[in-house]
Image (cartoon, rainbow, N blue to C red; front, side, top):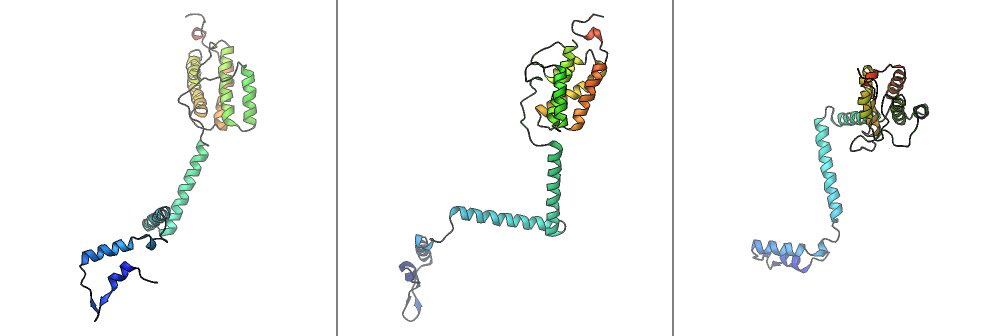
Length: 227
C-alpha cells in the first residue's frame, strides 16, 4: 500500500542510513495531523458500534467479577440468578398482575341502584368463574346495600367502603372488625392494585350471611329510638 506523502516524509532517511534530524515534538504533531485524515478512518466503527462494544465489555467485566465472588464460580452465579427469578415469580403470583392504582378510595357503587340480591347474584357468577376480584367487589356492595335496605344505613350516594364499615359498626358492634377488614379488602382489590382470591371472597360471603342474622342495637340505628 503506498504511504501517503506526509507519513512517507517522516520515514525518509538520508544517504548512508543517517536519519533526518527532525525534532521530536514537531514530528509527533506532523504524524498526528497525517493520521487524523479521513482516509485512515474509513473503516472505523461508528459511534453506536463503539458504545455497544463498550457496553458489552463492561457487562463482561461485571459478570466476571460476579462469578468470581459467587460461591461455586459461574455455576453458583447461575443458581443465584435462578433463585432470584423464582422469588420474583412467586411475588408476582402472590400479588397478581399490576392494576390501576387510584389516588385514593372512591365510591363504593359505580353503577345505578341495584338490590342486595342482584349484587349477590352477580358476585356468585364471578365466583363461579374464579373472577375473585370482581366477586369481592360485588359481595361488599351486596353487604352495604343489604344494610341500607334494612335501614341500618342511610342510603347515601358517594359513600366509600370505609365509611360504610364505620357507620355499620355502630348498630353492629360485634362485627366491627370484620366490617373494617371487608372494607380494606374491597379497597385493596379496587384501588390498591391487589388481586382478589377465594379466601377473601369467602370471608365476605360469610360476613354477609352473619350480618343477615345479626340483631342490631336499635339505639344506634339512624332514626332509631334513643336510649
